[in-house]
Image 1 (cartoon, rainbow, N blue to C red):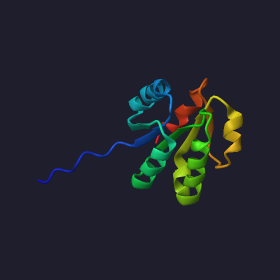
Image 2: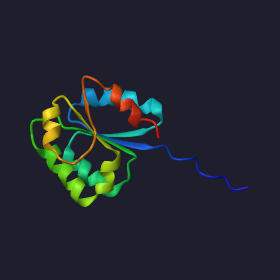
Image 3: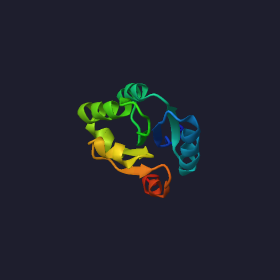
Image 4: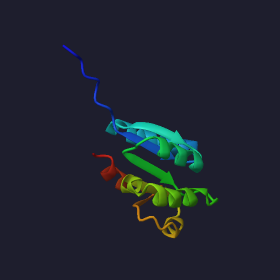
Length: 120
């Protein structure tokens, strides 16, 4: 009898330059069955999204530079299907409103809305 490989777990790409906060988010997400990959650099995330499929993408826009916004714009242009399972995490909702990619936004101070994205 041939054994089937175990079912793959859903994958989450977490893009956050703040490693401490990224670890907090990973701790919240992992118990929901996700395999987590953390990247601190938005351009590395763009390369990763071109190479692999993720079930959930959490993108922190709290940094001062415009790299994250630029990368999200590239994702919107090159691979719009990725935005269907992308959530912006930010301390500043005004920054998120400037990025017109049409994805949900959650605040770092209130992660409760994140829970609805953790059930597949």
